[in-house]
Length: 337
Image (cartoon, rainbow, N blue to C red; front, side):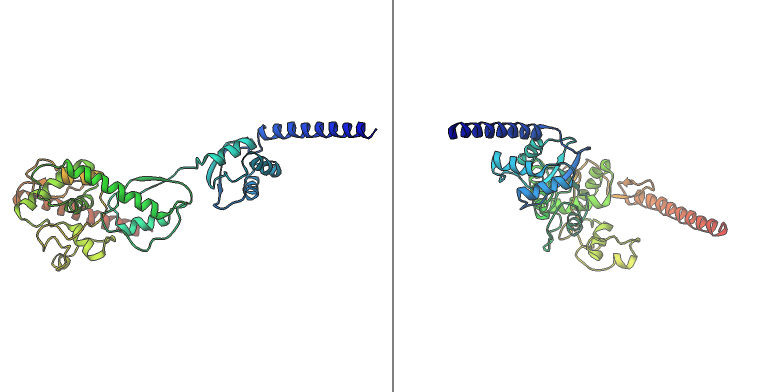
């Protein structure tokens, strides 16, 4: 009798376990409660139970006990990775576990514009959501390559800076190796200095090669570069001046005043991008020695001082016209108040 009862109990238990297993498998594979695709962050150090609570709080899970049970049964839960994940709508528990085990985190990105100082780049990175850590030792000017960089939530700022240095070094090595013959540049470092000046002189890609030619021509002839951006860098260390340079500032003696010194300044004035580095080492073939703004955002180039003076006079007239228009507009606005 006892054996019969024991047999019945075992059979009943097996039936219950089989039913529970079938139910659990069904629930693990069934669509989850998440209505719309969502991004969920699992912090480093999260336990299996903590991860379940995070998913539950995000609306991606309505049976945290089953998530924990399945995770521990199928892998001990130690293979779930921290990070930021994109969870599809109606993701099942199995899908959640597969995603968390894949390590395929959301790829964020940060774009660093050409021509920024290293201090400004560090500030941008430290202000970028998802990047972590602080940097107190600012990289040397000109050692970072402006570009778009991808990262995962929680990556350190230092990792991005390291990649920017590595990419800059690799690009500079390639461009230096293929540089035009006969350039008055003695090292890759001098090429970066020139490229940084080109970067600050024009934002128009098609002009960079010609701007480079002007500076190369002046270096070859022993002429001063007379670049306003270098003077501004010497005054502000890269911050915007916010006004035109004064004549007295062009007369100041400092290493970055290319109106006073001959040759290149002692270091870069910004972090140049690919196009400016390329232009510095592959300048256009041009006899031009001068350039000045043309009033449309670009520049007009000249081979002689006489031609350049005429271009400067035209630019001064444009400046006067713009000032007069602004004053007239202010007066009209005041009369209509």
